[in-house]
Length: 405
Image 1 (tube, one colour):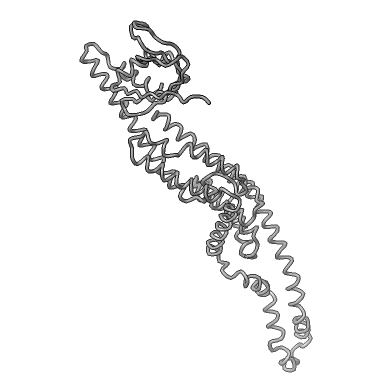
Image 2 (cartoon, helix red, strand yellow; image 1 turned 135 degrees about the vertical axis):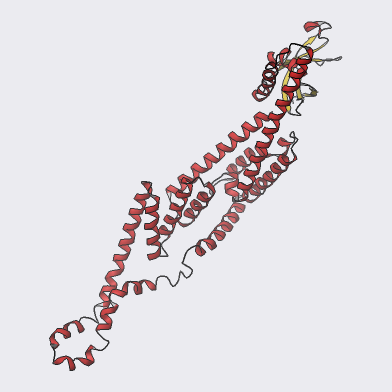
């Protein structure tokens, strides 16, 4: 079993001191430390270097040589540590300080001191700005996660396995664990990171096992069912099919009234007028409604099917408003048609996505999959949104954390 590395803490109290360490040591990927009892060559070492801005840089390496008294330009005795890698973010921060210091010509010792102080102030201002950006990003991320369900928080699909959930939780833990933000002076940044990690941990508890995921899916389906019915004028789905014959009967209803209402009783009186003209309409009128009502029903379904096909073609062509109108008409004709209702949600989601309202779009696409689980367009859009959101979170936090380091 490998021994744990020796942990050493260093603090630079001024930027000139850090500049000297950079020029003499970090530029050669090494660092010299005085030591009365040097450890053996090859001993692993971890150095926590604190900058004047209170930022922490972690350097890992191993003892490469023992420096005798007067060695290494008179700096010995001590040890020379070969560093594995120096973080690019640390080099960027130090080099920025050096460039700022060189921008002020040091003609006198006092001017040189003023330049160093100016560089320190400017670098401290950069750090403060980076922390402000980090806090704003964390606050926005927390607000976004609070509106998501556990599957969306972890960024996994509804058919995810235990391994998928564990992998997603591990990746998010590495990004948002409170220990990662302990180095920052901003208490708000640490508090926001803790709140985010609590949401991630709760989501993992709800998805950690197959039974837990089944319960979570059932709860989400029940929650979706209520707003979906309330959002549309389909509060009485059982009574919806019965009005359809009535809705199709208006064309036949005037004939029914003209037939059985009074004409049979008044035919003798109308005999003085041409009775032959009124008798034929009265006879075929009663049997006419039944065949016409029966013939009208398949025509309605055929019309809805063609409307859905046209709407699907419009969606693929990017004409979401026209497709939405067709889907809404089909949904009004057949309130129990899940494809039509799914089409309405799909168009609303695509319109929201075009307006960059990704939260609204995600909710719409989730509703589509509840109504039509095989909807390929909704599946593709959700997968793409998850990929983009994951990449944005990685890039933004890596950039901000890199600036901080």
